[in-house]
Length: 138
Image (cartoon, rainbow, N blue to C red; front, side, top):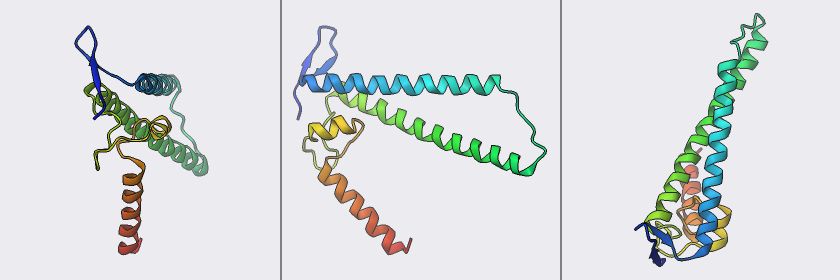
């Protein structure tokens, strides 16, 4: 397991300085998503709800709104993953594969800091998902 050292305030912090860089990256990503969400909310409040007499215009607007909702859902999921990664950093389990218990490679953590699987376990998971789709005929 990754070594932890205690800070003066009693909180754990990663012994590896690389994790500090990852923590900052996660916090920056979270702040950016929240800033963008604030802009979207403000623009939605300030924009009058338009009525389109033309069915094509109305369909286009509805499609854009549906797309926007899908993006918001993705951002919500990413925020949840970021919060979980920050918790793992705090409790000392960050960088450990949840499937095999081995350390996750540093370059994978830098590329995808919210990951919970090492590359071998992630590959196995994706292969299993592919086999499941094939067996269902999807």
